[in-house]
Every structure is written in structure tokens, then in C-alpha cells.
Amino acid sequence: MSKQPLFSEKSKLYEMIADNPKLLSLLPRFGIRLGFGDHSVAEVCQANGVGTQLFMLICEIYADNTVTAHPNDFENADMHGLLPYLLASHRYYLDERFPHIEEHLNHIIEAAGAKYGNMLRHFYNEYKQEVEKHFKYEEDVVFPYIEAMLRGQASPTYSIDQFRHNHSNIEDTLEDMMNILVKYLPGDILPQERIEISTDIIELSADLISHSRVEDQILIPFVETLENRKP
Image 1 (cartoon, one colour):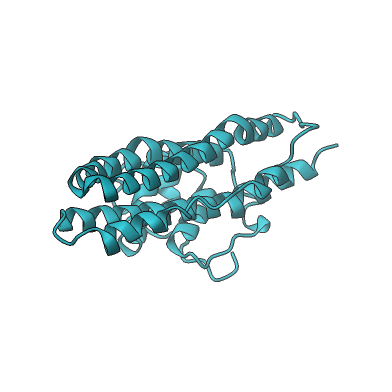
Image 2 (cartoon, one colour):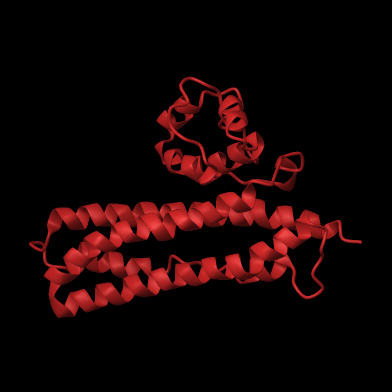
């Protein structure tokens, strides 16, 4: 890390989460259940078959958006859990977060009338489709490539650099949607639900940005080390 680490493997996991509540949503993506008492990070990771160093790296990135990971941070880490974690993150977004937002957004769209409702639906669908397209590319192309690399099967036609250049920002359409919800929709249209859904969208956006940082700072450099080992 580019600065003093926030956590150590001796840190109590509950204290980490109490100080950084956003880490709570990471636990099921690693297969870690609640009820771990006062055990340390290392103890909880060991009990759940999770690589401690990888878990701590991802927690650092989520807890502090100024943290920058470097290849030497994970050269001795067990990286086998990285792809399962990323896949679990995809399922979390698509199966939990988006349906939750859609349920509330549909109430607002129905109450907003055609002018604003159609715009909200358009911007939301555009955003979700971009996220789905991004995840599909990773699951159909990038992850199988990495799995083959881990088996020692190098591809002559693909490299992780192609993923880096196509790793686009999927946050751009959010600003238009937030402008409608917060600035332009008449104030008497479901004001409390609009506050709640706006908070949900902001939290989802921040989580997706951290997800992208994990890929940029951990996944891509890790795969580059695999590629450099090619005969």
C-alpha cells in the first residue's frame, strides 16, 4: 500500500466493521457469515477458507479511496479467492442492489408522470445495461482467460492490457438521473422515498467505483505477473 495500512491481521473484525460500516457488505461476497464474535481478521479468514492478505487488501481499498495497491502487496498473497469474490460481487449488484432500487424507482416513475418518469426510466435502464454489459464481458472473456492462465494455459490472442483499455467508467449516466430525482422532480412527489432511493443510488455508485478500483489495482497487476511468467 502507498500509505500505512489501516488494518492488520490481528485487528478484530467487528472493530474494523464498526469503524468502517461499508465493509459489512463485503462479508457475504467472501462467504463470511455474521456471528464471528471477537475473533481477529486472520482467525475469521482462516475459519472461512479466505486468504487473509487478499481480504485485507480489498478492505483497505473500500475503506479509503485514497489507498493505492501495488504488486508487491499481493505477491505472497493467496489470490485464488479473487475471481470468486468478483463473481460474488456481480451477483450482489445484479440480484440484490438493482432489484431493491428498481422497486422504489418504479413507485417514483409511476407518480412522476410521463415527462419525468420516462426520463428516469431511460437513464436508469441505460445505466443498468452498461453495468450488465461490463460484467458480461468480464465473465465471458476476462475471467475465463485468467482461469486458463492459472492452469498454465497462455492465450496467444488476448492479454489483460485489452481489458485495461476497455475498462470504461460506468458511472456517467448517474448524474442525469440524480438531477431529475433531486433537482427537477416537483417537491411533492414522494419526497421521502426520493431521498431514500437517492441515498441507495449514491451508495451503489460508490461501491461500484471501489469494485473497479479492486480490478484496476489488484486484478490487472496480478494477471500481468502471470503473463510475465509465460515462457
